[in-house]
Amino acid sequence: MAVIQLIHREMKLVLRQETDTFLVLGFFMLTVMLFPFGVGPEPQMLERMSAGVLWVMALLATLLSLDRLFQNDYEDGSLDLLALVPRPLTVIVLSKVIAHWLTTGLPLTVVSPFLAKLLQMQTEGVTALVIAMALGTPTLSLIGAVGAALILGARHGNILLLLIILPLYIPVLVFGVAAVEVASLGLEGQQAPLLILAALLCATLPLCSLATTAALRQALDSG
Amino acid sequence: MIMRSLFKHSRSVTQVPILSSFVSGKNLACVRGERLVFAGLSFTLEPSEALLLLGPNGSGKSSFLRILAGLSRPAAGELCWKGRPIDEAPERYTDSVRYVGHLDAIKPALSIAETLFFWGSLSGIKQPKIAKSTARAMTYFGLSALADTPGRLLSAGQKRRVNLARLLVGTADLWLLDEPATALDQESIMALGKIIAAHRAMGGMVILSTHMVVDLPQASRLDMRDFSCH
Image (tube, rainbow over all chains, first blue to last red; front, side, top):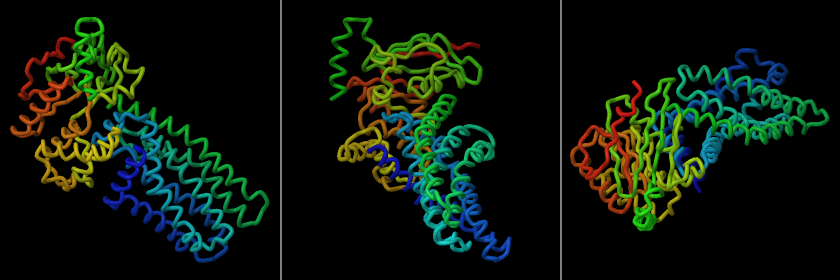
């Protein structure tokens, strides 16, 4: 019940303020579309880079949206009140992460096949990309939440967030790209990278929730 | 209902002074940024009582209230709720506490009614009940006409009134108010005084910090300077 209410509120905030989600999505689409202009229109070249470009831009787009995850609530006092809700703080954290994924990871996943086509990716690759994005973007939100909670109250928080989070995104990037390449080359063991992405999600779900909760407690304690 | 049983209970335990305190702190200390703000602070609070925190800026009133709310941990000492340390069942404790800090937690995009409904529903009250108590809270603080106004259009005083109106959505035994009268007009300060009186009449407890005049009959006073470490 509390989870649904919280997700509902987060969605309302994002949709009414109308900025963040569309900015993040706009950033993702525009930067990906810049590549054909930069590297030239040869289909082979574009296809070769497509998976890497899409994943790197998806990581950066997610990073752009992370500072709003807890920062606004921290600054206006909502985080204090959320911490005082008679539910475990981890439940609140998970609801916020789910809402974050619904407003960034999910839209990125939905537009990715169109952008992949633009970059001449083959159909097998596109299918693998969508599955990999669906499995990988929740992990990005979960890892990002830890960073977003750690930087609360810090000066130059955004740059700090970048430095904390980007190295942790490397496994998702590696296996996300691998999933597409294995599929488009028609190699054996196509599920392997996807299974690893699923495993990463299963591991980060409890670990990052707990780490984020601890980081939030720390921020509240010193707030 | 909870209040009433609490009140009855309090009557029966007043004969046993050792068990009687509902909220108590023993030797609490607070450290902020490697600076000891206060130490050796002990207090007790019984149903229907109010505690007024006094002291100049920076004497630790807000920090003390954050410790009481369970948001920060005391550097030393123990905080008890009904004789039990609050760490034993933190959720039961937060369920009994309503904290109004100096930040109003108003979202620019959400209306007053939505804000109050949201906080009501998160504290686990049933839907039809929230709608009713939200309406009542808004009437009490003169916010009914503004029910659909988004937060970004509210003045500082109106935001504060919305924050205070949360006190009337659902029930909590202990109210922690950090400078509740800031930005309020005379009329709203009177309304605040009245709801505090009504809350105490039902056996509720209030701890507040203020340097404005709020009518608080028979409130005990706690001067933070007595525990200051400078």
